[in-house]
Length: 87
Image (cartoon, rainbow, N blue to C red; front, side, top):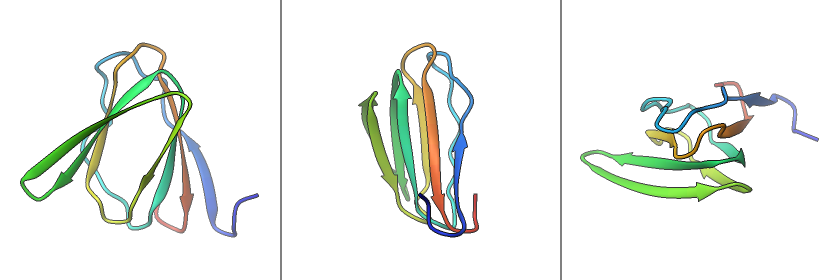
């Protein structure tokens, strides 16, 4: 059960090479890789760092942390769990 205000959102199913684009949220959230593999790109000013995750996996994304993820395999499925108002 999620705390009040929590939301689970399915991201589109991705083909290899598709990306969500660099973005950030006002609240932290949990990304769950249910199928496939993704590369998260963490953007800290001018420094970027890539980290790969294969299903099943979860990734904690802190509030205000610029990030992107790219599918590394076809039919990659990711769900995001938000714990607050910004979704």
